[in-house]
Length: 84
Image (tube, rainbow, N blue to C red; front, side, top):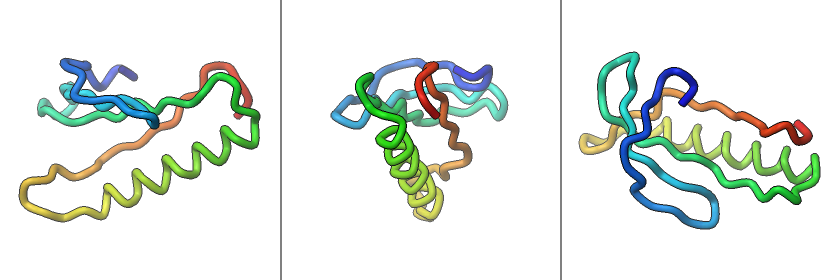
């Protein structure tokens, strides 16, 4: 995934996406990767709103500082050829 993450196992899925156990090949450690789910019928405006929500979620996750949690270190957004 993006040349950095190797997806190993699906941990869960819901209305907003799928969470995977993955291997960060750059730093050689296990991580969780969230694969967002965006409906195909979303308009360009709805895609922008979804992107903003995902960025807020990533920023909130990056602020978590608790011993059993691994830090959120990267976030990316990729469209599938639809409006940006």
